[in-house]
Length: 100
Image (cartoon, rainbow, N blue to C red; front, side):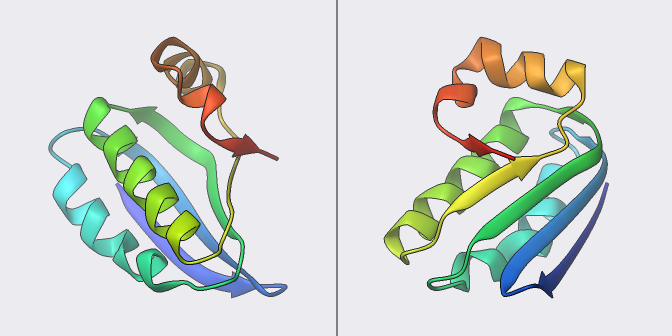
């Protein structure tokens, strides 16, 4: 699992690549921790290269959303492949997040 975070056009963008499974979750959560400090800027989770997400990965996404809401930021997800989108739909996360 690979995470890169950068600021782009006044937004914080996290690019995720690989499989966000239970084994990768602790390191991924640590890598994404800077997003929890963002205040008033939109956060984009770019999942274009994300191949899989487990419940542990969904928990990380939910934590980012909760912190962002508390800090006056919005979270958007973009680039979900069909398999990951199905996981979001089955779990109801498609109703919680905003998509680009």
